[in-house]
Image 1: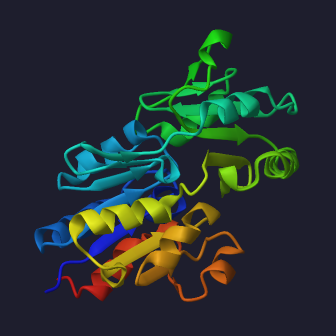
Image 2 (image 1 turned 90 degrees about the vertical axis):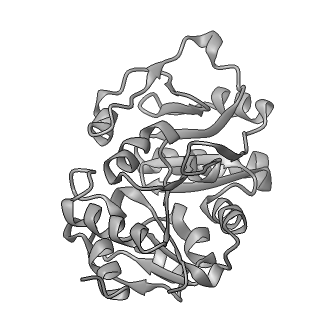
Image 3 (image 1 turned 120 degrees about the horizontal axis):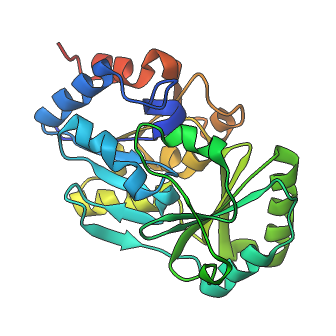
Length: 266
């Protein structure tokens, strides 16, 4: 059997309603790895926020984190990192915003936030990874893979409009949820990181199966030879990736079910 690369988003795609891996998902991915297929996680999450899921699988998994700003191999070796320009980060930090909008910075090794936001920690309950409230002098713009604004949809949309006006293609803007505006360096997304991973593995895009549910998955799904969109996906996603196959809901373990069928696992 020709080895394939199976790359999947986490929240809203591979993980269940509790943001965790099910037993069936773990068993399915282990079988595929044993058959010689390559596995990769691709998420807006921080690298350190993703490791627990790989540890639970107990098999090699490549990690595309921070929406493609970082690519690690299955031994935690850093393959590539793309930081947002320091001056652009400083401009984003200083950008006026509504009081309820939280500013987040994903650094190489940690997640900084401008004020306490306990409700954000529920998403990371299974990983133990959390933010640290930054002191003002720590917001210096150095070694930032992603700037993330979290707030009411209308407030982050207004920020998006202003940022695009100021910086255009110098930054890549996307959404993981309608409340989460995610900003990376220009040209940084899951698709460009996936291209680097395919090159490192010596595989063509046609040998890749990709799964996603939101707008930060567009480039990855567009590149993959076999693209899959969840039933719970953002309503615009299928229109942006018309070749993608619609599969089931993430709460029903649709990725594992489709892989079980696609590879005729016993």
